[in-house]
Structures are given as C-alpha cells and as structure tokens.
Image 1 (cartoon, rainbow, N blue to C red):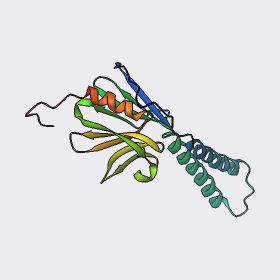
Image 2: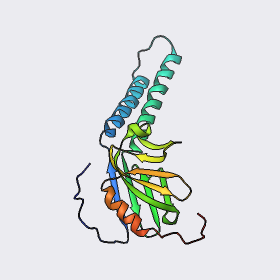
Image 3: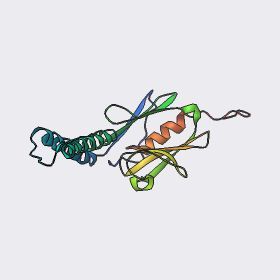
Length: 181
C-alpha cells in the first residue's frame, strides 16, 4: 500500500485508473507450481511398488491441487479499476477475469473505506456476504464502497481510494424527481 497526499487535487480526466496488488499471493502461486512439479515428478520417475491406483491418485491429486492453487491465486494477485464517464469496470488478475462492469447510472453513492481486510470478507478474491454485499479484496488497506440503487453494495480494494471516490461522486448524476431506480 502506498501513501498518497490527502490534500492534492486531481484534474477531471476522461478515464481514471487505479490498481491494488498483493505480492504475498505470489508465494501461494509458487506453492501451487511446486505441487504440480511434485505430481509430474511422481508420474515420470516413480518407484511405487504398491500398484498403479495409488500412483495415479497421487499424481492427479498433486497436479489438481497445484492447478487450483496456481490459477486461483494468480486470478487475484491484483485488481484494476477503470472509471470513465459512463461506467466503472473492475478486472481481476492477469487475464482480467472475473470482470464486473457497473454503469454509473446505477450507483447511488461512493464512500471511502480506510480499512478493508480479507478477514472481514472471508479471504482474498471475489467475495459475497449476505450482510455486507459483494467485494473484490486482493489486499488489506483502503478501498471503495459503492452503494447501488438496488440496495446492494460493492467494495473494491484499490490504491488511492479517496481520489477514486471523488472522481466517482463527481460523475454521478443526481436522481431526477419521480424516477424509479
């Protein structure tokens, strides 16, 4: 997490982008790669004498666990947030999946959250909790809480979240009287 001066002004640009990264998850990805390597090593150079079934189960188990750890962690190593004049787009990981696009017309408000932690949401990643809403949490620190017109909330961990909140609230259109959201 980086420190940003709180009193600097940000010019209104066409597109605002922000990111948050969790370098710790690279260690988990490395552990996943090690599990895959162990599975491959067992398959190639095995001295098992108790039969083929235990060997196959070990190889498949190691490779499956390794793939789950590797791709599960790489999908949430970082989050990228892009705000343009009409939408807010959240992309996770190197492939950009999962991705969520929220029209600014469906956002009722945005708030700065100084302390968002994986513990509050049940871990890293794309999370949903009935009492809290939905979140993309890739690290502990500052974040944005979007209140949507349908009553849901969406939380995103991102560096320089205060600037993002200012930009989002500046681009929100006030509701028209009698409009149903």
